[in-house]
Length: 585
Image 1 (spheres, rainbow, N blue to C red):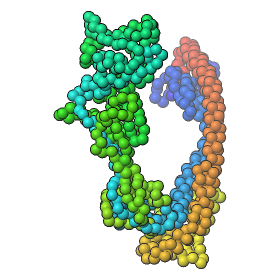
Image 2: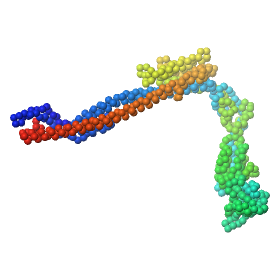
Image 3: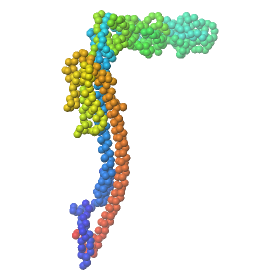
Image 4: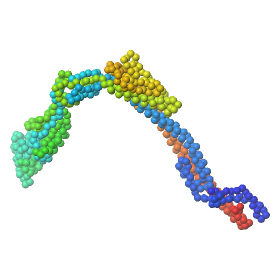
């Protein structure tokens, strides 16, 4: 607390008078503190005050900043209003979209007559309407077979899925510029020698023992020429013998046992349906065979079945229907089929209204337009599929329409009247209210169903809400249901045409509500930019003022220090000259 300085008093000294200022100490009898005090302005810039007027400087700084922030607050309030409008428009758009959707659903039902499919015997056939537009009845009879997928297993079992050979192997010999396909009777060196010598290629093959096993030797019968040998059905890949051109070549590999060591990875042919797939095995075993089959994209899946009697290859078609499955050891579909022929798959066989039909699957959608039916069992007795209007679909759609209408009506009413929301006076609100009134009051004079009330939908003029009377709807006859479809029309005619008009409001790209939302977003962005710019200006002003007030405060403190020093000097002089301490007055 600063010292209190009284008015000048008269003091006597040696018969004369002189005027002095008597500065009384603070009421708490403590001296004035000169230590700095840290004060903070309203916008976060620290102000360091050391004089007795520091709090005054702080107040002036705060007042200046607060005055400068008034336009910012006004812009923030304006932006808050814009954001409230945008939120209200979004809610209005959502409610309008729901009503548009419900009107489209009614129009679609009217166009399709709300048809539903039923079966007289679901154990034989089930059905679903998928776009049919006319009532109808169909008879399914003589379901002699259901479609099934082909599934076969190997005729023989294999002791080991990874070690037991599955192919005798097919190889290609090139001699004298000609290629010879060799089908090995067994996958070993001895069988390869026999195949080469029986190919009529003008060469002689033999087995040459060496210290670590045996090698294949091929000698030209006609002198020097190029000789090559490949594992596969074509002259490609790695040449298995040397190619010196001398007419005498040996295998590049050594075989431990000419009677058992495999010389070929094997080539096999799969028949799936009407197509053939020839492939080489990465290894001559059951695992490699299954992998090779699955990589052909043949519409089948191969797997290995492990049993107590050994491993079996299983091949199954991925789709139902009659499918030929066969597997041959070699580059052609000939010889012994390695698969069983017990489950080659079957097509569905039945009659539709006396017409015999065969289908590869049990679910059929390409026979009757707009109707999908599924055969579930064989039967010699007829089953009837009926397409008829389903009133429950219409009642459900009407209830959904009433709910959507009331939701939008509530949203519109919230923006009108003495307690109107942020969209008070907005033209789109008035246009929506007009549209809702037109929807509720729509009539079609001349038809059996002339208004919504004929369908059990009533309008409450006091609340502006609709209600749906299920009992009244259930009392409608089948002919009245058909008349209801005429009343509803389509998305371009009749009651359903309101769907197109409502989309003019609710469309998320071109709708009237979206246009206003886009405008508000632009306004919000502009206001945010203005606010940011003003905040930066106020901040810079605050920094400048803070520096100025700190300078003024420091100068004031310096003057206070000078005054204190002068007062101390005067008191000392009075004490020396007159023996009096003026500070005690």
